[in-house]
Length: 225
View 1 (cartoon, rainbow, N blue to C red):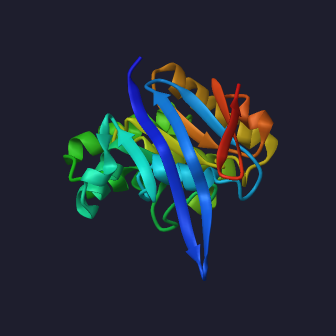
View 2 (view 1 turned 120 degrees about the vertical axis):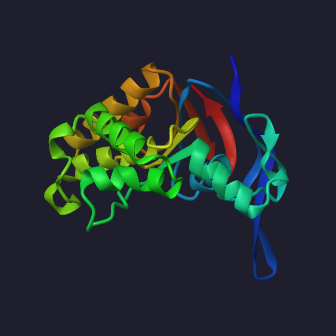
């Protein structure tokens, strides 16, 4: 197996007045290409801080974060932004769709930012809408879509630059059980096709869709199943 992301003795310490507050304490985690990993734990346990590390949104106080074997500390801020844009797809609890753009246009936006040729943009965006089961909603605006449909558009948008890894932070947190299940079925299908997925969730039922569950408490990994 190929390791796509690795955290080596990662600490993240925040300074709060006179005190140091450790959000992550000596995290060691390797994620292999093609894995579907869920990171679980109570609020405040460090899940989102760890996702920020995996997503190269933040750098550790101590330790190393390796993306495809390269230490992210070697990148300057502009290089790191390009790496995130190309190699990492992000999905959040809030859908973050542009209300004045159609479903198709929302998916196309990252590709246009990266100056992908128009013909490819059209082809890829339509294929991705079909992948998430929304080919018939291409010209609908977010307000005309259900919450589950909006999140599936967000999934398609995250995939538009063909990332190496998809990161999802509580992707079903704003959805009812049925809509959440539909989004997770999309995740399962994408993972079966080889996409690497790392998901934060406090819902053990949702975590059950993953192939590996990493449990956190007080900034530490306390077990895996």
